[in-house]
Image (cartoon, rainbow, N blue to C red):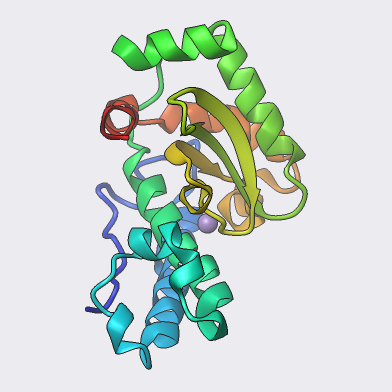
Length: 202
Ligand code: MN3
């Protein structure tokens, strides 16, 4: 089984003016594609891993042969993270979550606005490249965390509900060095229906 890049569920320019067409084209066609190609290359000699999904590999990194463990962590991570990322965004997105997710966010972070502030702070503070996440921990509680590189929270037993990519490739062409502006604008493209689905299934 070859891992494959997810096709965007909308046009490259659909998230404008918040995320430019140029960023989306490079991000999907070059960055995501590179992670998938590198993952397939790393796995090629290991036929016993061929049937495992990228998520299964990330949840069991200890069982991945040491020779390719870092390559799998980086590239299965890059694949899974970006596949989620495309799905939790949409044109004319934004607003607020509803239902149980809205209640849980209010319970854990005070209010939706407080949640956004804390999420943005965690994303801005991530040094270098990485992601900021809303996760469900082993006790079933929501937490905001950030990870370096393409590390996915599922490798630490956490369920990723939503995440924002804070690598420079995600914003630099449009927002230059001002990551906080990108973090603020990103809320306008969040697909809360998809995030709620991930929360319910986690
Ligand atoms: Mn990226």
